[in-house]
Length: 211
Image (cartoon, rainbow, N blue to C red; front, top):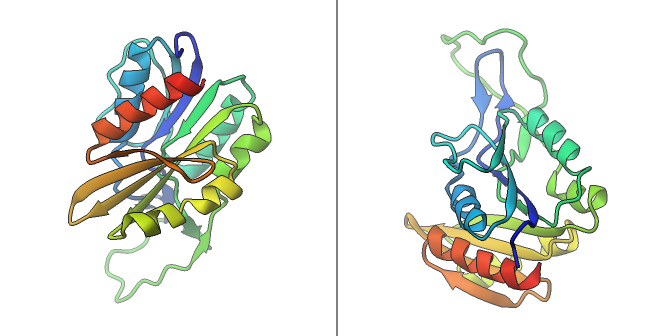
């Protein structure tokens, strides 16, 4: 049962700076994280939501919401929260994969004939979760575009092996249409969905059975 279970949910994008004014981000809306928050709150779970710079904020009144914008802010908040005994962590935030090799200290001029930005990979924060909170039940997320279910399933292997996820929600956007699957550690498909609401409902049901 999910009643009184302590669950940490992350959602939305992260920013990485280019200069004093500009950032690199992604198109994550945080919608799936918000829907999950609503469903889990209805089940009586005690939720902490780490919410990135989304256009619409979560409306759940009883949920503890902690805002972040930049990757560094998110890392700091996440690591602080991981010191606490959460029953489950649902890591649906779309965390930046790259950062600038050199961040410009002042605003770049807008009349430059050309601007080349050198990017380097960022640390995968999901790999830190089980190291800092090994007993938690971890749900990871994978988003791809224009791939079939077989390839989508294959791309989840790293989350099970490298991040030690207990479940993975693999999402795909194809021709602006959403599909998703939920897999366990044996890479068995537990549920499918053609809408975020359907995936969130199925994930809530699975967590209700396993926590």
